[in-house]
Image (cartoon, rainbow over all chains, first blue to last red; front, side, top):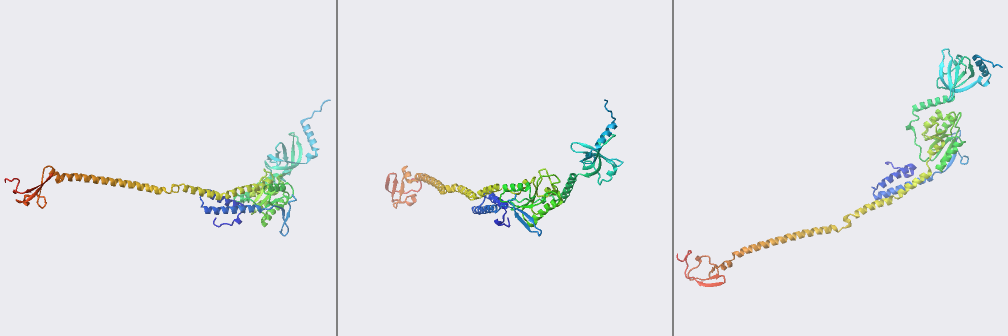
Length: 81
Length: 406
């Protein structure tokens, strides 16, 4: 944890792993009160980030192809299947 | 009427004749596995063709055998064209082989093993090469046929587990000529444009011929070279393809591949809920922990009875004071005793006591005690103190020594 990533850059798994780490530390009980409040805030931020990540997924079903020039053609196909 | 009696030769010749009229038996393809293979010194080949339930004697004459491009061997699966006829001498029918071809499926199995061995040796299937499948891919590339059950099954599974899925289908033929090149192109396409986080290559079950494109080197190499992790779900559970070996993850079926590609959203939400509950409890738990610690401190004697230190001190002081007092009392008593002892001794020495025993004290007129005759002369007025009074006397005579007669 030398080069600390900003929470916004965490993947879902990374965020969850970070939360677990915080929880493990907290639940061991040996944390000064002010540090514990910092951890709590950090944890809540990570949870919020996870929720944001989950909500950022959008359903899209499409067919992709490449035309002769190598451009991507994407055709929605939710209705076709 | 007497029944016609035939010789062995006659009956065998008769049967041979019957068979020779049969149009199927005169030119037929037979599939089977070679066993009891013998090349006679004459150049003819003798062997038995068999399958799981039956066997058939075969012979291939030198002229045909010389045209073979390979040496048949036991266990080889082959297709043989020839005719069925009776060998009269032994009374057996047999297949007179004209051409032998290695059975396509046999060839395929061999090719499969060859390619698998080669790529394995190259390290293409090594565990260290396998990329991990992303936990929750933003986008899933699927390479399979646009029509048919497979894409529908995949989409159903994905939708059930993770509704907000982004699926990109790269439609392609999954069997026949050109399918392998197209499959490989799909993998490269997804990689070139970084269109997805995971690729599923899928096809339903089929014969080894049907699944063949997935056993071709071009597919194996494209899959192994892919920077995007690949899940292979080709055929049924029992089908293994080269593509399976090259992929980062092999799924037994297309549906299973879809299962492996995404987590179950409901489970994710539940576990996030659990974890955030634990986070929310941190301040409470922590305060409780600190509070218990504080409680312990407050319950300590110092805080519980802060004056006890002082009262304890006071007790000590009082105890010392008492001891001190006691000692002083003893000292005083001791002094008193000494004094009364001394007084008694003093009392014993008192001149009054001497007087009480019948002695008298002589005083000069000036009042001094007369201890010697030297200080007295005839005619002095002296007084003698006795126990109960004084006598005023005049000295008649003075003698030195004990007796007045000396």
